[in-house]
Length: 150
Image (cartoon, rainbow, N blue to C red; front, side, top):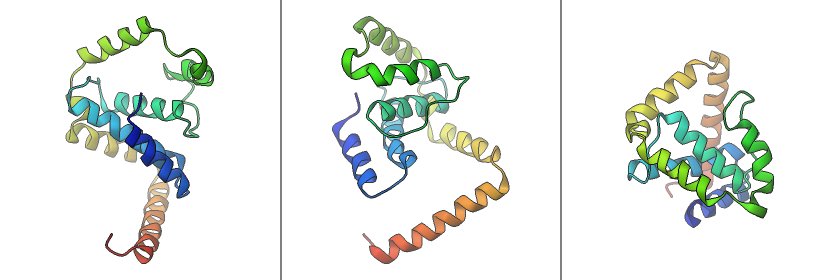
């Protein structure tokens, strides 16, 4: 269950018209914090991100379904529609928590996340990265005009 503050931040992003991936970022951020504070571990940064995105989907963020080949794909597409009715069984929930607690904590370290971000960026085309950078620059300048030094 995500923290109230995380849901509040995500809803604020939605009200401001920010993209679903930005809204989901709040849940991923929370998950990274959980790993860092020792609540549970992860194998790698990708797992922490996947857990965060799954929580975001459950909370109602309009994200596309996970990639077809991934382990959580089938579960997530059918499950989240019916989650409100029946939820996860206590036994399954406990098993998941126990498994995560056995994992290491270094998967959410600054170094691991940085390495993941760089490798993910390398998989994108130069034009795609350039477009994203230009978009970021333009939104940054408009945000500064609206709210200088907040």
